[in-house]
Length: 211
Length: 211
Image (tube, rainbow over all chains, first blue to last red; front, side, top):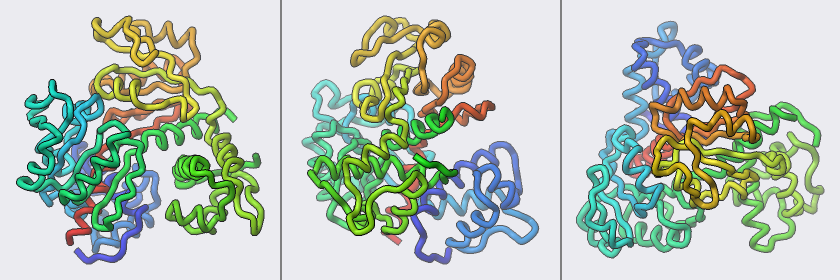
């Protein structure tokens, strides 16, 4: 796949393409035009063609896109075949919610371990994933390749734990704490899940509807 | 505040403005130029001026923005003074995580109630919020104004619960399930929190760094 510098807006739309193409595939749709795909995604046909042109040539003029093929291509672009691995730090409510209900495998990730400080949790297996003591973190990461550390620790532990993850060589941190991590290594990617940003956008939209 | 039709990209940036202005205010910054604010937010100065111009006139040519005033204005625009209320449906791991760790009040929301089907939870108070039986949902919503229903139920319950919320008159649904809700009422806003979209964006970025 030919590449060029891809804007962050396009990167943010890629998972939505994957999601919509998965829905279409499950609904039995074989081919779709860029305008129909755009309608489902609230984008224009030309925006879709432009987004996808960042990654190569897809679809055929007048024939639209083959849903399953495009879905596979988008999965490749998203790195879903890279056998990424993840470990969860913090097996509290949110950590447990992710372990029990979030399908890491559907995003191409294998969740291999979880870490906590709480004695009563250590040694347990949650949804097939063993919980280790956080004192074992460095040893584990030295012996097992972990692409992404999932930070679901209390806010006060977020920065120190992120430093330990980075020192141990993770490539990315999926940060659910509302702490700003300010990682100094340009090769480590931080992806923040900001619940408040989402709720505030909703607040704006319901307020607008009332105004 | 004068208004015009605001794009969804601008709406998505507003909470980030609020977050950055809050950080600046806490750091004691009194005034900031659009270029310095842009640098912190990875935007150009002209993009910031253009974003804010959707809502009126802020800042003074050559003097930049007064941080606290602009923060207050953005809070107003976001509807944070509207005394929005919220109720949580589903007091599982994720529902509990939100009740115990997410500060609804910092987004201008008052969390007033939670609902579940589990007998052992009903009647409990979690972080000051009472848990009711879901059979009481309609009665509660008839007697108490609830702006937003927070959906943290299992996927299978998402659609039926969203229908009950809409029928009972909520203005918005904050959807943490990965079910597509397809609400038919244009006046009810659905805000989805798609964990997978976030993880897939991270997957893309770490894969790019490796390529």
